[in-house]
Length: 225
Image (tube, rainbow, N blue to C red; front, side):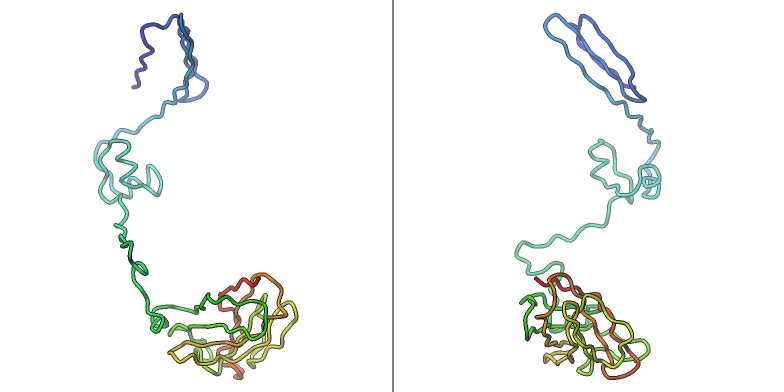
């Protein structure tokens, strides 16, 4: 139950329930008057420690020991999330620094170097890294100097010969991937001067002039200004 001590110097007391679990009360004394609202929250009695599934069932997801501590209750076993890794202030990267030279071994898809930024101009160089798991299912090939790519608002379907002709305001012409000296690291030389400002997708044909693979969306977006 909840006991409210209104004080000993209250001349007139008034209380009224205005909603379930909400009580409006007031006091008028000789010196001053005041008004308050009490929200009564029904609490479920804890007959024993709850496991994580029990807490989730009663209170929903996202529980942590901090919420129980604020309620001055013991934290049930299994509620706290796995401990986070504390990163040193001097750490270059956290949790680990992935050497760019071996990044292709760790990543699952494509990545591009974000600096220097690609702008709308001629002779723009896009630096691409392909993960070792990137492989066209039917052509059974990954990224190579035979692959070609372009930037576009969208990727045109059905182009299987590794050639894409620029569409002013929409896409660049395709260009072959050039080895950047490291495993699965390439550069792509593009003329982006005819593109509009906004987001553009990197489209790639892994088997290039082959007729099996077609240009597909890599999932990478570049925001041109």
